[in-house]
Structures are given as structure tokens and as C-alpha cells.
Length: 214
Ligand SMILES: [Zn+2]
Image (cartoon, rainbow, N blue to C red):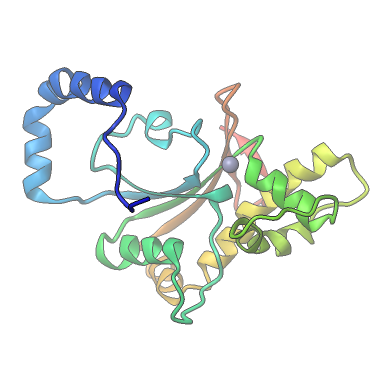
């Protein structure tokens, strides 16, 4: 078998042609302007790969407004300049140093498969044979250690969703350029949890350190 790509499936080609002849045509001028001026997004969003999470939809954002990085369970690893490949850290570095975004949002969500797997893994309830995911979900360990263990599994997983965002925010501050940008008031960090079914969006209140409804 050769290492070649395949033609795009018809349903995707059809969707693209529809977009080009409708949405693109309607916004052609603005998109041309955006193409020549380059991007200048105000906000970076780190969200889960989960296909149900649409940060641009929730905030009504258009092209050029959000710099988005998605990974399993919307996690930020600790600052670790060890010469390895760090996709999330590279995206954060570009957003802060080059794009100079003013806001960085960690957008979590309820019923996150990554968080659930991390919970089962760290509880030693299930042994997963993933090649990459287990290592990635090790980032969750400090958050896992903070959750109450004498409550129902469902409540523990819900707590882990919340604690993981707090841990990721903590990890963000381990990046020297993030710490400096926040101290210089050039950047603000935000933690959010989205419930897809109800449409609710909870924010991490920095005073109470709880997630609250708007
Ligand atoms: Zn998820």
C-alpha cells in the first residue's frame, strides 16, 4: 500500500461547493480583506476535540476572531521546554508571543470522554491500551488528586471536569511569557464549562473558585 491520500468523499465536496456558492459569496469582501490584512484575533480558545463543542457558535465568532486549539479534554500541560514535540504549548506560544491575544479561554464541557477516561485510568478501574492517550491524560493527575473520593462516580467525574480546568490554568501560569503577560495586564485567563444539552455556560469565579452560571 502506498502512502497516498484519497479523493475527498462526495458529501464533503458537495458541502464545500454549497459553502463557496452561498456563505463565501455573501462574505467575499470581508474575507478578501481578512486574507490580505492577516489575522489579529482577540482571543485564544483551548477546547476539547469533541465534535459537539463549537466555540465560534457559542460566541457568534466569525473568521479571524478566535485562535482555537483543540486537544483531548482541553488540557494544558505544564511548561516543559525539553525539546520534545508540544503541540498545545506551541499553539499557546504563537498566540501570546506573535498574535498577542488579549484573552485566553479554557473551554471545558460536561460529559467529556477524555475526562471520563482519565478518571477511570487514575482510579485504576480500567486499564486502557492506548498508545498516546494514557500519557496525555497523565496531565490530569494533579486534578484527580484533588477530587473527593467519598462521593458518587458521576459527581467525582463532574468535579474532575472542574478541577482539570483549574489545573490547566495553573499550568498556564508556569509558562514565563504567560505569567508576564498577565502581570503586565496584556492578557486575561478564563475558565468555562459548557453543557451542550442545556446550552449553559459556567464561568470560573476567581474569587469563590467555583463555577457559576452567568
Ligand atoms: Zn471532551
